[in-house]
Image 1: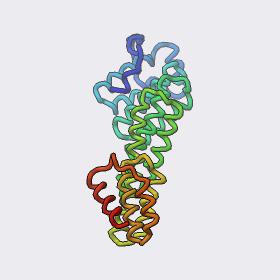
Image 2: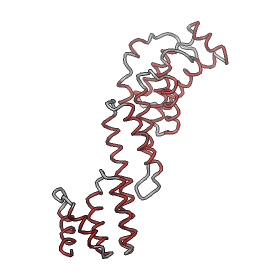
Image 3: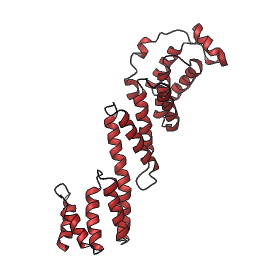
Image 4: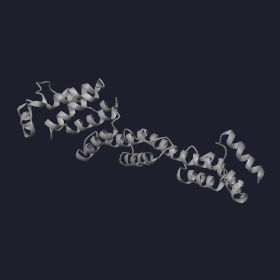
Length: 257
């Protein structure tokens, strides 16, 4: 699983010694227990890792929160936040996961987990985005976060995934505009349909809906009697990559010119 790939040699360097339950420490006495060796932070971290390997994410979170309480300031604290964030992520508790990852990259900027923390925050917003026919606030936020990640880590370990999610999110926004155009077209409101077709072309020029939006725009211009504008659209078209059904439609426009 991804969150174990860069655990480095964590388990290999952890020594197994006696662990005292959380109830043995109250308030400011926690660090004293750590110094005395009565609470072994690394061993508990190893236990949390084993729980995660077995998909016992709730148990892992309980142990990790215990470590946070008892072991503040230990060198492996970035790993604690990373494991906590990934456990919440696997449980689909995205707001909790985001909170942990934000602490991780803010408090431990040199941690090897910082890149993934940025990616996971964008990934979660992408997961939470709704279908194209619903509100697209989360989709737009996912795009922003994915671009932030790619700006920070252009050759990062997750850059290919981030690019794929970015393209998918853009297509979702383009689909919303395209479906709006189709809706107004069915209502025979050609001006409104034309506006949305143009939005697809101007705002999402790399989306998969562009070819059909171009054809639709030419058809709407013809329906509005704007033959000169339609001719300009058709003349600039390279239809080699178009599907046959779109070629048929654009040829129908050409015959009417």
